[in-house]
Amino acid sequence: SVRDIAYDVPRDRAFVLISDGCCDGRVAVLSLATLQEGANISLRGYVPTRLDITASGDSLLIPVFSQGAVFVVPLRLGMEATPHDIPGGLVTDIAIAANGKAFMRQGGGPGAGVVELDLVTKQVRSRPDAAGSDAIVDIIRSHDRGTIAVVRTGCAHRYDLATDTFSACTPLRAEGAPTTDLTGAHHLVGLDVYDAGFGFLRAVESVETRGTRSDAAITVAGDYVHHFRDFAGYLRSRVSDGALVDRTVLPFYGTYLLSMVPDGSRLLIASDGDMIAVSRLISVDLGEHGATPLAAPVFRPAPPVATRRLAPAARAEGAAAPPVMARGRMRYTSGARRSSVSDSGRRARAKSVRAHEEHSS
Image 1 (cartoon, one colour):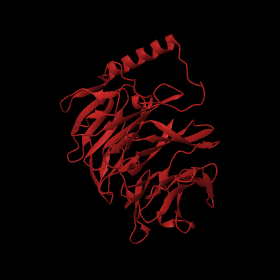
Image 2 (cartoon, rainbow, N blue to C red):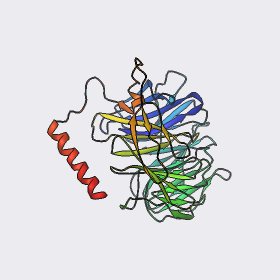
Image 3 (cartoon, rainbow, N blue to C red):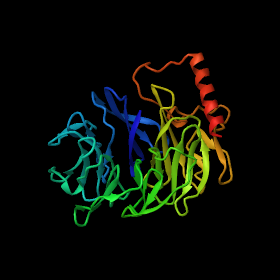
Image 4 (cartoon, helix red, strand yellow):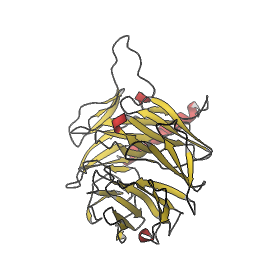
């Protein structure tokens, strides 16, 4: 499945971290313009869940919990992953700040700590000023790398680049996977929007009733929140007043990753759906109404606070079919390994989905 995505917008590249959750991982290098898959970076034998790219776009950093190291991948020198051992090991989550320091979670569960790797000096040190008794949900950064935040289950630390210190842990209303905007002026935790210092602003409106969300993202401009609801596609809510604006029906369900391209132009949506060996990836061009997906899928026009559906794009007679990645489907297993589902299984699942939709409506 797709675990994380890092971007090198000037070079038109997206680095998609994929792992099978068991034994093997890899990074697929995609063109942002076409979603065509090019090179691959092998992480065979490891199953990392996070990655980040340096500000210069020269290297990827991929922490591997089981290895106790962060793998450094030079993107201009053959892309061979080289481990850099971290004293104490057990590292995951990563965010690289504008000052060239990479912050990672060390350990798991309540009381997990934060470790810093200086990318210039290669020195490693723990950060007791970011210590806490709650478990760490994630370490995030703003798109301009000026803001780093360590988000725990009950509070959040904000990193100050000027003083090289973390703030005390500011209480949060609820749990949820966090994201932030271009400069760190707005943070999103679940469906709660906070200001730069994690002061609560408002909760955005949703049809979701389960409380916290793990598949939500705030736009680069900090003006909208895109979030997902099972079987209903993804929804867009306005930050200024929290109002639910519209809903877009996707051609698949099971979305678990919404990722904003740093230039604010697109949203990438990844999903495993009901397929074991196939991950789907779609790129949505963000216009006034979040309007046009890339390549094969297109939105039909619809007014605000309405439902849109994805439909196949028209193709001129004799034109070649769009590439597999442009259709939003990514194969990530080798050879012919792919899940097979019987006709009866498909019918049973379709019946279950219809029943769920009828119940939800």
